[in-house]
Amino acid sequence: MNITFCCTDTKAEPWVAGLRAALPDASVEVWQPGAPPADYAVVWAPPQPFLDEQPRLKALFNIGAGVDALLQLRLPPATRIVRLDDAGMSVQMAEYVCHAVIRHFRELDGYEADVSQGKWSFRKPHSRIDYPVGVLGLGVLGERVAQALRVFEFPVHGWSRSPKTLEGVVCHSGPDRLDSFLSQCRVLVNLLPLTPETSDILNRRTLSLLKPGGYLINVARGAHLVEADLIELLDRGHLAGATLDVFRVEPLPASHPFWQHPKIQITPHTSARTLRTESIAQIAGKIAALERGEMVAGVVDPARGY
Ligand code: NDP
Ligand code: OXD
Image 1 (spheres, rainbow, N blue to C red):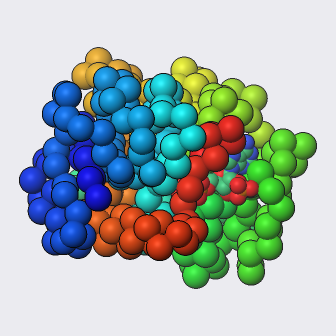
Image 2 (cartoon, helix red, strand yellow):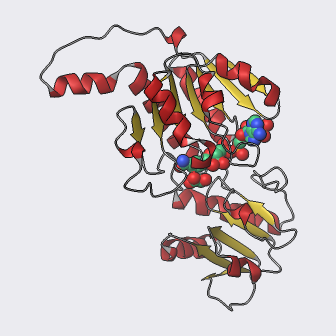
Image 3 (cartoon, helix red, strand yellow):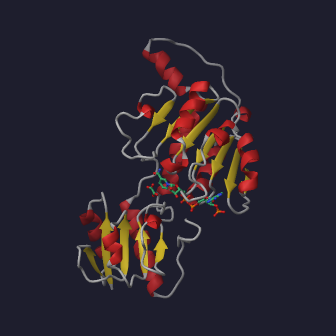
């Protein structure tokens, strides 16, 4: 069995060594143009010529959860695309989002500013009931985030395409329920995949539906957010702030207004990193399962876009 590795911006050697150790009977090589076609591919943002040289792939493993960039490419027909299915990401996402929600709710930035000026001051505690949190997307990451927020006793709402039942989470589904979902939330966490239906979903109209003093946490994709609309709503005071991990252009250009905006906290697309050891174990396990003729989790539906 031949496995080819083609991941842009990723150090190949440790991945290749890990895959060889996990699948000792397989030949694992970094792709070079003109190499023989492989049975399986492990990819992140591969170039089109790579895909054009893979006519007989049994599966293409994406070393991330989001497949939006991959689906923009011309893929070998009928190739199974398999995304990372948690592999250590959901706990990272839960800690990142809970941290952002709590930092806002407890006004920790305000305390930090006071302390830096030598001030011993108190702020009036807020009531959790006034801070319902909505999670857009209740998949592998969104569900874990919603459950983690419940532990801190925030009222939690979630929105997905198909109806769901999650303990302690008020679940909404479908485009018809989006506006009523948003109007019940003050803090909004985006964990949707980027698809034609969800592109630009965070815009002036939808963000205006949040309760006054709303707060946005975007950890999914930059193209979900109309950036100018966010700035307008922050400057107008309808939104109190935002934590953004993802951007339309990454790295965020030096001249971008988000860098300096006083109500925006940014991080460099780091809320849930791909963990190599966990990912290799998951991919190797799935290759072995596919070779035995079994089904695997995390297979992408290209028509749905995730
Ligand atoms: P999943 O595919 O497991 O879940 C997606 C969720 O979104 C599902 O609940 C799905 O509904 C819902 N959804 C999709 N389309 C729609 C729609 N049109 N209307 C309503 N709901 C919709 O994805 P993950 O949870 O694993 O990941 C989510 C995204 O997070 C990734 O696609 C990626 O872009 C981003 N990500 C960001 C990272 C970072 O470091 N910033 C790291 C990892 C991922 P249903 O359940 O009904 O199918
Ligand atoms: C992913 C990501 O999709 O890292 O996994 O953004």
